[in-house]
Length: 164
Picture 1: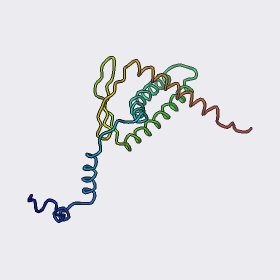
Picture 2: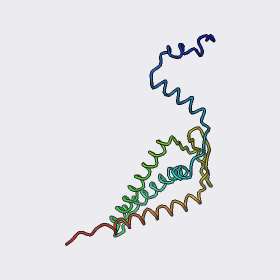
Picture 3: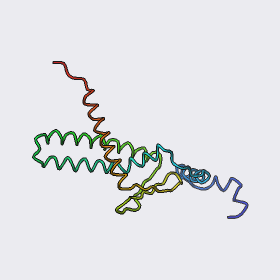
Picture 4: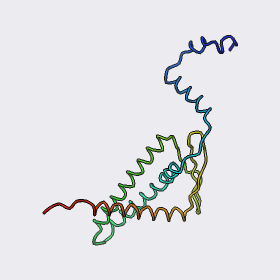
């Protein structure tokens, strides 16, 4: 393109471009000017939730299926409680996924072995990874399932009893 056309304003205004394409182009230019920043502690916790909640959900669902097939006398009660726990976890997972999507954070499983799992995340223009060891994962999942059970029991106990 000749130098006469480059910055005279006529060339830029005469180009055929849809408004959404122009906006995307301007956003891309402004994003390059912004330096990538590290995620906050809250966002890192959301990433951990994104990783751990599906694991917790699958554990609870597997246990619920095992209890259903057992000859346990209170299996119906145990199954329903497990399903309530799984429902609460799934609700929280949906919220976390929505929040990550709104903040434009993507998390990918990168590498897995017997001792640890490495996850890569992209936050704005910042890329990094974090590692979760199997022992940490077991302890954290156990603790979080306990918290979910406590919340469920508290909610059940705090419900108003119907008058007879």
